[in-house]
Length: 490
Image 1 (cartoon, helix red, strand yellow):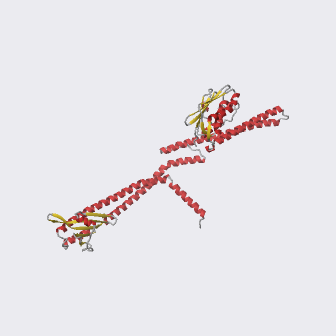
Image 2 (cartoon, helix red, strand yellow):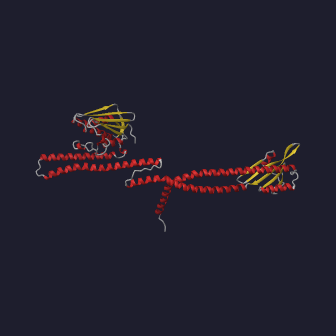
């Protein structure tokens, strides 16, 4: 059975996803970290111990061989061996010494001739080597070649002539260091076994620790999945670590916020349905009344049609405000930001609203402290300020006043809208920016509006990365303060 190319691609993608998932797993990274933290010191310690043993073994062997060579050279010098290398005792001792240390001894005279070679190969030949030449100057040498596993020593043969020491020859002693390296290899094997056992323990302990450390995060993930699936999750309290406690607190804030938003959404849908249905119901009642009567007088017909027109206008206002609100909810990419003269913008708004204020004999005053230019979306900012001023006029008392002021500093400009109106109760201040919220529902019929004006104003200000605050006391008026950056921050 052969797999199609598409199936191979699917399998390979699955393998890559699995590999990527494993590599990014916190468990895997904790285990790897523990292995690295424990293995690197162990490896360093192992290498240090082996190196220390090798240094000590070489040092001990060097001292031992040099001592033997010194004794041997004294015997060779006192027995005139360089001129007559026929002493059976000395030859036997040379052979025994080279055999014990698994090495080779060559005795060299002052003319660099090899008078004795325990291997019997180079006897009678000439040898000129740097160490031999150095030794003839009276300095013993030693050399260790770890790669080729041998040590080489040169020791001078000294004779006393007229009370002075003269170097008459050199003993060149080469020995194998296989014993040292075999011991090193055995030690390394044992160290590797201990190291492997330790790594196994570390891996098992690492998995245990990783599972223990990841468990709180799994609990958090499970709660997030419940929220995602739509289940009502209990408040999270994972206090195992400072980080999980912070995540728990953030999660609980998000959960509470989502509940508030969900309740707000449901209330919003209910309010929209009610607000849209009310004018339609009124129009239907008026239309049914006209249809139920015969020979309706023109005056009554005009009166009913006027009422229907008012209800249509009310419906249209609600729909327009809803559309404005939807536009405000979009991303800031929809903003048409450009530099505007805020003084002129506010004056245009107030010029349009003065006739409305004049109908109730409300004095509308504008106070500008300095010229202000800022990067704003003229339409959205105008909508926000217009709603605030309209509300100040709408919820004011006869012969009252509305004062609008404009000021700025090096970073923000401020628009303050104060009125002498009825004010807002303290219990309502936290809700006035909610959609369709009315402070005094008993007057909702008397005072026209959709209940969306402040929500639109707030969204417009927030879209500009600004802020809006309200201060009010019931019966003493209300003050809204708007703060907007002079330079738009995208």
